[in-house]
Image (tube, rainbow, N blue to C red):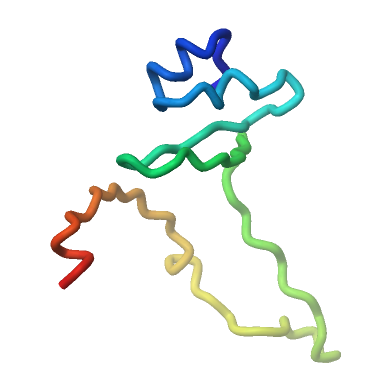
Length: 91
């Protein structure tokens, strides 16, 4: 998220770092988890569905090289995640 003032940046992530994201840095943001320092990350948007690449004929007999994966195994499944408690991380 690009902000116009250090006040906005501090209100969202607790530091003024987001104000320094330039207009040339499309898809850049800062992620802050708990009291850790913010981490800069990059994203991108793809407007179409994922299409697996076609296999390459590396065997010389017209068959595809590499493992053959059934199409149903390529199903994308949405998920959510919750933060882990400190107790779970130390035990």
